[in-house]
Amino acid sequence: MNAETYDALVIGAGFAGLTAARDLAKDGKRVLIVEARDRIGGRTWYRPFADTGFSIEMGGNWVDAELNTALMAEVERYGVQLSTSPQAEHHVSLLDGVLSHAPCPISPDDELDLRRFVQEVRTQVKRIDPALALDTQGVADLDVPLGAYLDSFGLSATLRGLMGAWIRQETGCHESQISALHLMSWIPLLDNDVLAIGHTPTHRFAAGTIDLLQRMLDDSGAELRLSTPVVAVTQSAGQVEVCTQGGEVLRARGAVIALPLNCLADVSFEPALSPGKVAAAKIGQSGAAKKLWALVTDLPPKVLGIGDHDTPIDVFFTDFPAEETGLGGDLVVGFSTQERPLDMLDREDMEAALRRYVPEAGVLKVDGHDWLADPYAKGTWCAAPAGLLSEYASALEATEGRLVFAGSDIAHAFRGWMEGAVATGATAAARLSAILAKA
Image (cartoon, rainbow, N blue to C red; front, side, top):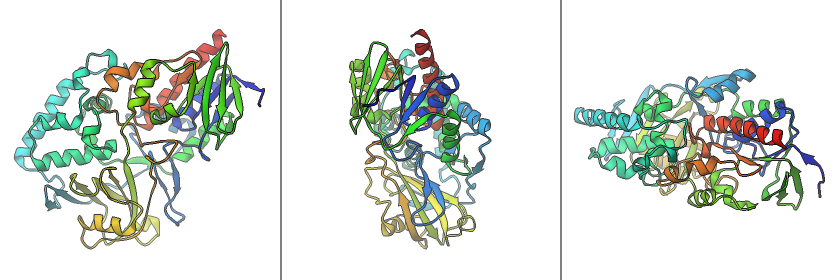
């Protein structure tokens, strides 16, 4: 048993945990980070593609360089370099059974319906303050399944399929599994651009997310223990005890809990967490995307493909052209959802899926990570189902005794983004510092 007592324990070494650890250390606190995995990064993971030496992001990836202010402040603090995914030069879509190469494959009538939809969403979004918990804002009427909300507009199959593809690419789940309010809460943060969700991602970390993560860890000087799952957290007078899977007991004056929402119930808390947190953890979040990578030949240069739910892939695009990879093909990234049978680790399955869009395409290698089966993630980025946010948003992020909480799953602003993780990590550090100052 370890008798040493730290000022702060941080459980989880993703962006939220490392931000909190760095800020606490800069405030003079002695910090120990405990991470279940054998690496830092949480639901971001920069590693070599398949059996090559070319690295890609298996999880979180892109940055809004203008609007992700907390994350960009970290990028600038450490001089981290960003690069950009290529802009599409060729388009292909498969919507309502029609293969098209038009950049925008909808009719003039669809364009009118899209404008009507955008205007209605803008009206509703005016009710949302992204700085506040959503359960304090009287917007429960918007906390409904997104699929039903979209269906209420009577859109054509083509337009509905196009919108659904972009939404599933952004959320990693079927529209029935996510709340309309969840996506609406992003729009005020995206300059009120309702269609921003349908924009192709651009900025990314030139040397991977690990570049920034490692710099933050090094700057913190915090002690780090990898491969150390936590099974129990106990609060007593003036102290927090953390029991690891290996039976070790770690002690601190306070702790930051920076775990994915879907993993919160895997840790025993004494005293028990608030009923609101327990209920929210039981509901969980729905994000479970298949983020797929394929090394592909015979594609049009810098292609962007979009398909409706009857196709195996929602969105795919060239992220690294062949001349950049040196691997004999383009590296394509794409997104699908769990209810579809596509096996992203089966080369032949992936080739058949891509050939529905580009018949001559050949797939040389595939790669991906099953985040839903990952015991320390149990899902991808946060997609809040209907009923979670209008009922439990405040409970999710509330401090409980000497425990403060962080992570993109509980962020008010940019929930599900790396931006949300960094912002909540900073908030958690400030809250714990205030608690420790009173001790």
